[in-house]
Image 1: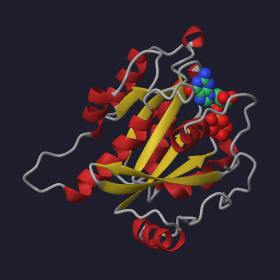
Image 2: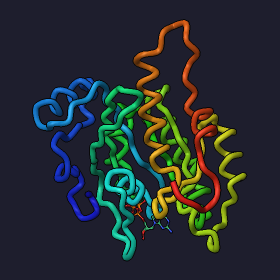
Image 3: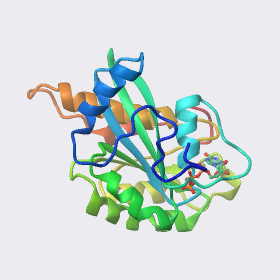
Length: 235
Ligand SMILES: Nc1nc2c(ncn2[C@@H]2O[C@H](COP(=O)(O)OP(=O)(O)OP(=O)(O)O)[C@@H](O)[C@H]2O)c(=O)[nH]1
């Protein structure tokens, strides 16, 4: 991961997707078929964004490896990515997940990657009010740098930390409603709703690519509302 890496983050994956204006999915798909044994039908670029320390790397590690990085916190340097292929009703969707540094000094590096993202997982920490207050600024950056139809999911992470919580679930719900984005609380520690966040993105891509004109549109916010778990327990 880019916790101690240089800012291009190319150390951990086999196919660095650069923000170069080329069609990202096609490039990555071909690269993957050459360099990996895991085949896929569709590919989606997902970015994890939010203040430093909200748990972006931990969320990715939980999803990718099923583990929790506890102990001393090492900030991500620049940007890095990991791939995971998931199955959505028989369709293999490759998620290329970019973990960005939350620290202000890396913003100009990460902005360049927003443009070809299919989905953005925007995290705050339910025990950190500043990280929640900064969500409006993050949404402003998304508005400026991402595609108009990007899927945005607001995630209130560290929901297991009940004693330290300062942001209520209702506050997150209200903000998400105001900006018409999907919302749920997650815990990289227990795993609560972590798979769901990524699977909802994969499902959204599949529906966009395969939905017939006569079928209703897939609404990612409605989907997570139906599927999400609430409270402090497990995934
Ligand atoms: N209790 C609890 N702690 C968490 C959770 N997720 C992350 N943490 C802790 O929060 C700290 C920061 O986590 P990171 O994943 O490194 O945060 P980040 O958002 O990647 O930070 P930057 O790389 O600086 O942007 C670490 O000490 C983690 O152990 C969670 O769900 N619950």
